[in-house]
Length: 135
Length: 119
Image 1 (tube, rainbow over the protein chains, first blue to last red):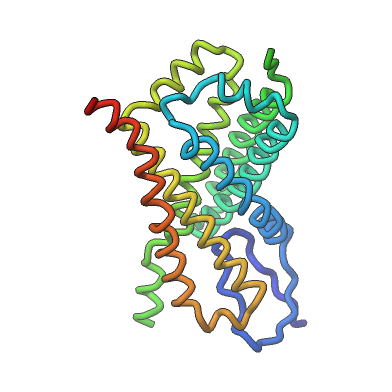
Image 2: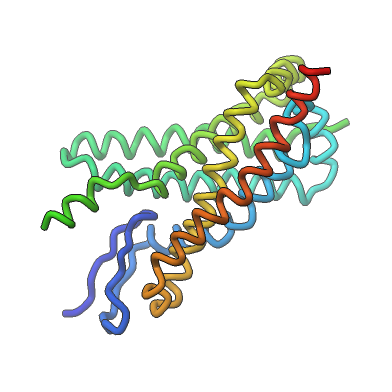
């Protein structure tokens, strides 16, 4: 049996050395991190630059989002950003805690707390983004 | 063995910057969920013009740029295994690019406050 289980999380590397042909079974968390990584690679810089660099932070307010959310594309962009960032961050943070905390009970409790906090905040934010009345 | 112990004690800046970005996204999402109460949101927005808030934003921008470029390095290393030979070069390039992009951003973020204060 040559299949190995790869832990999830951003620090799951180092992978086997180059030239080492070991077939691997990657976890669902690893696949989720890969997919969200490629998408967030575009979404997060676009968000940060469009919100804080191209606009003066002193002018941050409702007007920015009223202008922005007139277009459905921006609503979908912001909604996708929240969902993907929370998935990526949740799995990454969970992986980090799993590697550092050795007591199973504490680990489980922390995973639940991370899931609940990110889930509640995510649902609140996405519902606001999709239902906000710009008029 | 000693080298291994030393490397495990090194700060994992990828994880640190990722945590900063996650905290930022949570705070931003929490703020967004109050966008309907316009007065509260605008008061919060006005506070973003202070020097302290601008410096915090600079920290978030730095963490975002570093986490993005470092993540890209990891993804490339995973997709093209022979690039791992050049890992030190990639790490140096990530650090260089991070500061090369971040420093002008800091200037853009902080300058309006400086201009306003010294007017």
